[in-house]
Amino acid sequence: MRVERVPFRLISAATAAVILAACGQKPSAPPPQTPEVGVITIQPTTVPVVSELPGRTSAFLVAQVRARVDGIVLRREFTEGADVKAGQRLYKIDPAPYIAALNTAKATLAKAQANVVTQNALAARYKILVAANAVSKQDYDNAVATQGQAVADVASGKAAVDTAQINLGYTDVVSPITGRTGLSQVTPGAYVQASAATLLTTIQQLDPVYVDLTQSSVDGLKLRRDIQEGRLQTSGVNAAKVTLILEDGRTYSEEGKLQFSDVSVDQGTGSVTVRAIFPNKDRVLLPGMFVRARIDEGVNNKALVVPQIGVTHDQKGQPTALVVGPDNKVTLRQLVTSGTYGDKWVVDSGLNAGDRVIVQGTEKARPGATVKAVDAQLAQPASGAAAAAAPGAAPAAADAGASGVAASSNPAPASAASGA
Image (cartoon, rainbow, N blue to C red):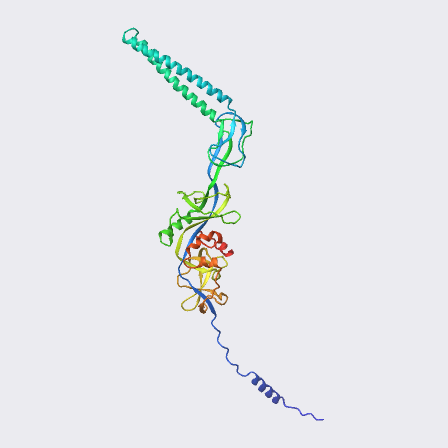
């Protein structure tokens, strides 16, 4: 059988024709589409300004009951930790020595009063006799002087009786105030001394109670500057509302009022003391408890707020936001925040009114890129948060203590905010 050979040139030409047919000119790729992002336009709104300050509770009145006479304690007449009334007897000190001293003082007074009668009669007699030259003028003068001494002895005797009665009264140790007693420092049979001011017990009035708060001088200065520049409005210190957060994180049921702010700054800590007063009829608050107080300081009518989903943090923990400019290009802004209000960050600087902040599709936007901005469709928050986050919802500050929905005048560190 004869096989005919096909020239190599013909094979190469055919192969090239097939390859050229398969690799014909492809159609050009469509241009990349401009990513679409959801934005919100920043506008000034009304936000309550709330300061959260640490503090410690203290009793409204504190009375240290101490011995005012020397003697043996015969009995204790109260239950430790119980409430007592002002004037209620707490201890009984042996009164026998003081009864004897009172009787002695009374006898001395009676003797002085009897002597006054004698000296008055003698002076009156000498007055007649000296007029008739029956006695010398010197004798009359001596009689008048003796009469004066007798009157003075009566006055001294009365003072001694009063002193003895007071000391006898001190054997009944009574409560100087209405309040709750602490531990008894002495037991029946103990010897107490007035010179040593022996401490018997301590009584504290717990309704109402004071809460002493600590505020940095920087925060106080910022608050006063905001008020002066018109960014904040306040109805006065006396009307400021104070909400208390207990050690277990719960909100105290009663609302307090500010009493005063210290006029000097602690040179060691750079802080000032702010005192508030709270009712405490159920005795929930005890002296020495650590608490946190939220103070409604005013209203910021020009606050700029951004939804939290539109704020990210860089590697240094600084808050940032992506803003769409007039040319539809994305820019990265560094923000300074002062707290949260509902589901939004309160921005102090970094944004201006009218800026369009990207809150949806941030993963598609890069600084310098061109995007298509559309109005964001955000889910409505829960009823409580919606009321707090609504523009002009200043009354929501009243519920800030319970829900944590408030703008704080104490800017949290960026790292802490990032964790939030």
